[in-house]
Length: 334
Image (tube, rainbow, N blue to C red; front, top):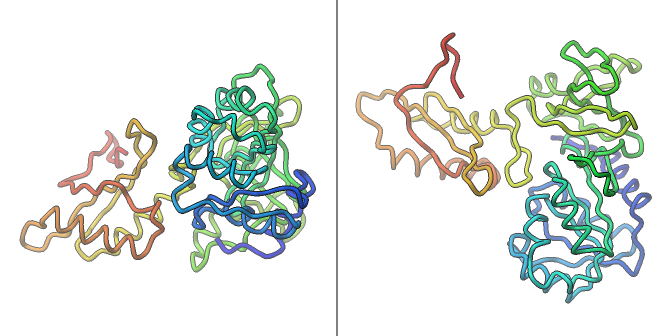
């Protein structure tokens, strides 16, 4: 996505207004730079005179080392994807992280159980649940977590200079608590997708409630407004998925797979491995008068994908199939 300087500045300025840092704070930068959260981890502390501490590569996946780093640098503010936060708060020695005063969470739905674990094991820290796609400058809604006694954690309300609509299939307004597609508008929207005009036109649409030229971004997420006006996330409605907190467009991976000369058709799915979601590519080989060696095709395709996609978008498994399963009406049975 081609984001604008104004959108990123608005995002960072709002963050300082909402969760003010000063010279006594230390922000831990631990997110790989291919994930949009790394933008605010780098620039927010540097814009505000706070201290920036850099975690070692891969340290974000090792809670024991992370605790050592937090204690050594007296980190006050850091980010977690909910699934990693859930592991972190169960790590022995967490009481050493007494310097932490703000935990910012985004990238996946935050479970109530994880929220309660933070309240229990990091009582001196505030927990903030943020939501947003890269296409709208990282985050667009925010919620400071409290024990509501409910079975879900909301994603809150829009940040400064952004707004939300929850609309039906015909872009119609819905009743207050009805579930629909969450759409975003305001200063945070990206220009579109680089050199992908058709996808840009599909996802960035005219705002039916705005003035001429205003746009909405279609998130593909289901949501509803609670009676209080805060937004509750309800899941995905398309083939865009999240793996380890990273939002992935499966169609983009499929397009790269199809660039391989020996691949005729391809389907990429996110499947539960028992340890979280992982990407699996199913490929139908080109007919070339002789059988295609499955191992050679797999290795060749993986090398090609590593050169055109970030590591987190390269499928864990590549499987060759002879034919696609179809439904009764002839559609691909995913």
